[in-house]
Length: 121
Image: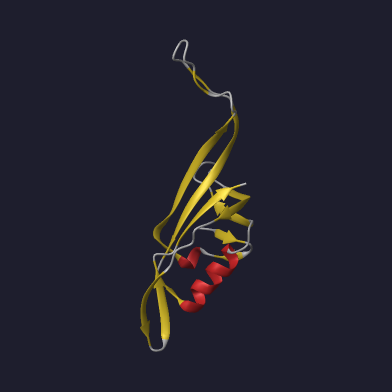
């Protein structure tokens, strides 16, 4: 599966089953339930992607690649979309990037619990 962020191949860092794809609608401010007839009125302005990427335990140097790349305000993400059946590329942002120190082995630190919400511009 292709999963690139700003030209960096992130696929090897992703945990098994670690890509959750969502598509959400952005609605106009006049959308919502009418209090007169209780009908839902919806004006969809756009549909956007959200990806939650969960990473396998990473060595410190791998985690640094993830955090330095996702530290940019906007990143270009290219992935195989389950919604289109093909490759899709868009600008996304990420925030709240957690990491938990797992262990040190042979002088190398390992981190787990790294998860990145990526939201389309």
